[in-house]
Amino acid sequence: MRAEGIGGYGEVWLWDGATQYEGRRVRLEGRRFAARVRPRRVDAGVGLGKRVPRSFLELQRQFRGRRFLGHLGVSAGAPLVEVEIESVQGSSDGAFDYLLSGTFRPLPAGAALARAGPSVPGGTAPPGRCSVG
Image 1 (cartoon, rainbow, N blue to C red):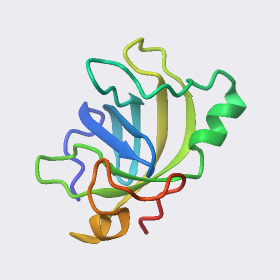
Image 2: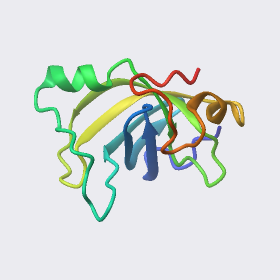
Image 3: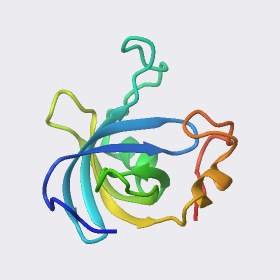
């Protein structure tokens, strides 16, 4: 996977088996990235009713060390990747809830869909950690 536009913006999509996140990549260096994300809004901007964690410890529990199925918008034909979040904090950009940083690795074509459930996004995989690797 080529890191086109290092430091440039790109669309981001993450899924942990229960919640989808969408956002914008703000940095990409090798297999490391940083992105501003928010839970994906459905039905005219109405969320799914989950509360945004307010404390640092709550944020760490929600994201850190978890694996996500994702797309980091490296290029139009970029494959799905497995993402592991290493740090998280509240975003200073009002359009997004979190600033995440972590690492990623490409998945073989078709492997993510086979492990994630019948359909992505919105599959019926069990909630919690999405083990895609």
